[in-house]
Length: 118
Image 1 (spheres, rainbow, N blue to C red):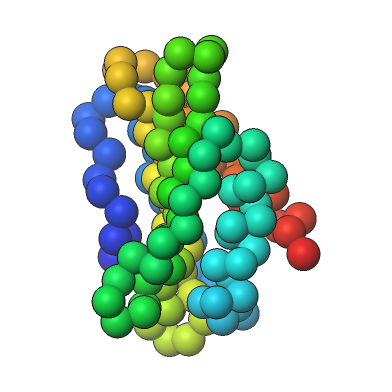
Image 2: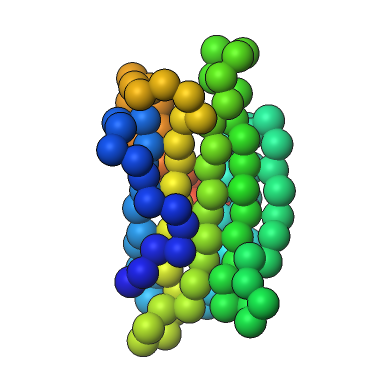
C-alpha cells in the first residue's frame, strides 16, 4: 500500500498514515473523508482530483494553531489492490521541530470523525 503523500521529515511534528477500507468504494470513502476533515474545523479546505487518471482523490486543508502557526493536512483516497479503498493522511507543521503531539492527535480525531461521518 504505497502512500502517495509526501514522506514526513525526521522531526516529530508530522504524522503520516495509510489505512485500508475493503468495504468502501473509493468515491464513497472520499466523500466521508471530506466530511470528516471539514468537521475538524480547518481554516481552509481545497478539493482536488490529484491525478490525471482519476485513481487518486485528494483534499488539502490548512489548520491554524495558536493563531500564528499553520499546519497542512492532506487526505488522499486510492483504489485498494484487491477492491475497496485505501485512505492516506499526512498532517504536518510548517515550522519548528516539535508540535507537542498536535498532528498525531489531529490524525486520531480525523479517524474518529471518519467513523461518525454519514
